[in-house]
Length: 171
Image 1 (cartoon, rainbow, N blue to C red):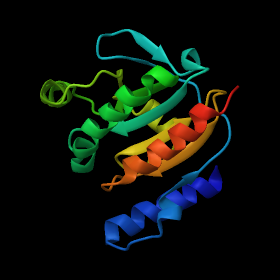
Image 2: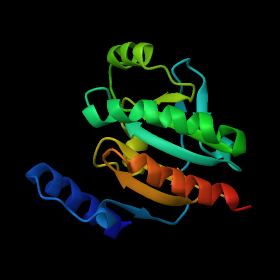
Image 3: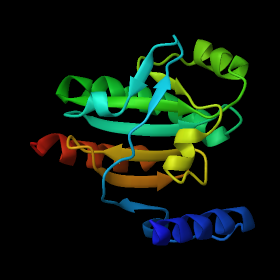
């Protein structure tokens, strides 16, 4: 975990300074148990990661003030619709204190997957989120298998590659 934090700091500092890093430092394979959490959904119902054991889960940390997050959201919805019948669940974790902008954005760009509220960034800290958006993919056994910071057009193809691989794995 310490090495991952150092890499994430390097990625964040490089990104802020305009330095481009190899994608392998910003995204890649990961391993280890995913930290369990429970957060309220937009409707107020709690959603916990442990309740989704047996599913491949993509957790996307995002905010409306993040331009790349806004671009990525419709693509995440397409992934949800495509893979949900195969044992896949998408979770959007919004990190804003005030949900007004989030509700307005989701009114214009509706999604079918649960959007969870993390205004105190409790879960974001559990996952060492250092940039928006951040994507974590968890396998059916509850292990983190992929982490990606940021978003560039085409990143969704890599997400789908990982999702397809994990869907084929059996618990």
